Image (cartoon, rainbow, N blue to C red; front, side):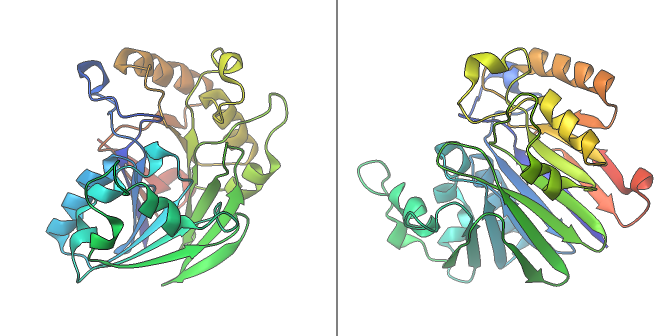
Length: 286
């Protein structure tokens, strides 16, 4: 039994299709989680377009989206996700921050309204279903897959996820803001003992004071949380648009000096988590 993770978009805020962002990637947030053939998609940023093309080639018919939140950089790839135009495909979309404000369907459909998008939501052919829950709830997806959630500190709300299967676990903690000197207890509880934590590392500790209140964190805070929670490895994620490849190379170097179990997520990178001892569990490929 294994959990396989592939990064299709690792950038935050806005896509950066430029030459000096090629190594780490310019597409916004989208991660594919494959749990023994079950496909779970974390966020629908611009990276989901390429994922959709790949899934069409695999001819899979069922998908699940778990949305961290619905700011544009996490949903604006959805209308370009090719499977939504196939009538033989079923797609379930879940979110934990909109149950009191109209729900996830309302948000996804509104971004496709004229005059901002030419194809109306009603033209989507797939069998779409929508579930709104409250961040902090837990639920089973069947096939031995269990999901725990926690609220994140982000403008308009957000949800962190922990996906567990067969003794392995990954956590997706993006778009959350920390308070200096006060570790987020909700996050610590969610990530405790996880094999892999994908963490919002938009800024560095040095940059953070300039952007307080914008809803993001730092790779240093991510390491502090992961070390406190006995996490196996941490992926630095949601790179700021201004952080080019040279900047991210330096982040990777500095982060590994602080904690060797840290790596910077790159577009196209895959991570496999096998049911073995924690030291042998995780393999990373580019």
